[in-house]
Image (cartoon, rainbow, N blue to C red; front, side, top):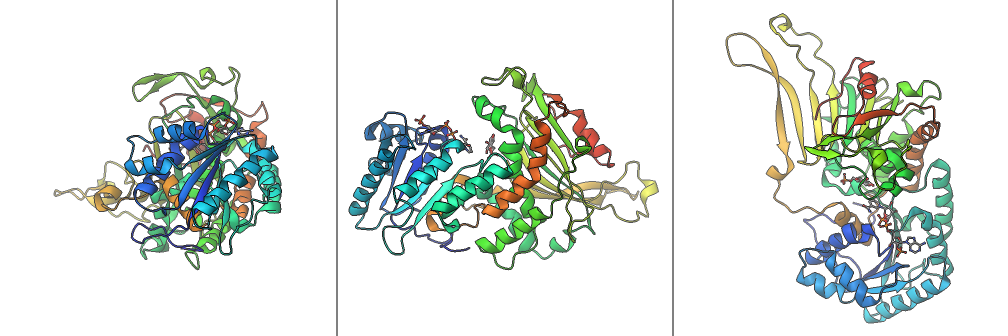
Length: 501
Ligand code: NDP
Ligand code: BG6
């Protein structure tokens, strides 16, 4: 991989002495995702002896309160985590106050001395996106945007969503690039840290047998499903502002799509891969301004039954307006205008409160041109498909026709299945573990480059505009079902249907 060392489990990565500064240290992401990820990295000795954390947020806490909170965020506790948290520091402060950053400078200098003169800095923006510009500005004003030692590093990890639409993302870039060079910026999307998302690259570019079929000549259509059984839980307030488009489509879905559609990269390094991803996203055709509802379905869940439990409707969730028109489900029919994919529809659906949690990509191949034995078969043979299951139970299935034993020549669809955890015993790193480690190692491959973000916003911006119009149809579906009938109708108009995962 790219600029830094690889974090592959088979090599020993070497992270330089560093401090992770977390803005938003009293929040949900820090406790639920970042601390468990760090604890795992520390326990598996991926991080150096000289590594620590400084938390920054407005909540009043002493160093000891913060240490206790971070310690409790990891269950069951690990002895190595006890030792690590004992060094953590906490700063109470506003992000627009110079005093907060003067204090941060002081604490980082103390670490630098304690670490023998070298203390690299990784700033993690785990606070609300509205604070990102002021954080960048304040770090710049305080002169905390440059390494203090030759060869050292200062990097920022920026959480999603990066902007609210095409214009605000450009504006955020302008602010960020006034203080940090693009090589210091790590825009995170935890989907890219998933082993199985990365496996899309291996499947396509480490095997000679799939790539010749991976184009308009053999592929009839592509289906991407990101389905969740959970509702919005306590995140109603956040979700009202985001909706499925900003929460899942603009980032996770677009990243998976880019990996499916892209051309083979010249090199497997950060720019090699990201150059091809951005080219692929650029080929996705703008949605039309008229008849958009023929290509896009937005919907919201009503009361229903999910995994045998009663679920309330979205409008009754905590923090949600009883008149809300925020989409909890989106289905889209995307077109791609390039040599490889022209004429191949890409159907995408994502939603909360669907029957189960599953993320998968299905390549539906064209039907065999002629079936000499077709008249002997009572059921139409389904065309071949390749199912890449990203989560859960990660794996790959190839569905094909095989002769049913017996005298008659009857062919039935069957499948060859590969399950990740049956084949590999190696311990993998989860999304946040992998990405934190990569950022510390200086490997930007699995982070999103500025131009990718803008292409993803370009694709979804016409939908954001349309959804802001109260007249745009808002379909409804019962919680625990596979979405509204309008979504089935959208693919049926093309003579196709969604796969039942
Ligand atoms: P929370 O609301 O739980 O936490 C926000 C944090 O930011 C708190 O520590 C809060 O601390 C701090 N904060 C907020 N405003 C200010 C301010 N003006 N000055 C100083 N501190 C501030 O949010 P999450 O942890 O859920 O999300 C954080 C980021 O991570 C968001 O960008 C979100 O989109 C992203 N994210 C979250 C995921 C999750 O699962 N939670 C998943 C993917 C992305 P205090 O009130 O003490 O100031
Ligand atoms: C987050 C979204 O980015 O991804 C959540 O904000 C969503 O709404 C989550 O539930 C899904 O992630 P995963 O890894 O569970 O598929």
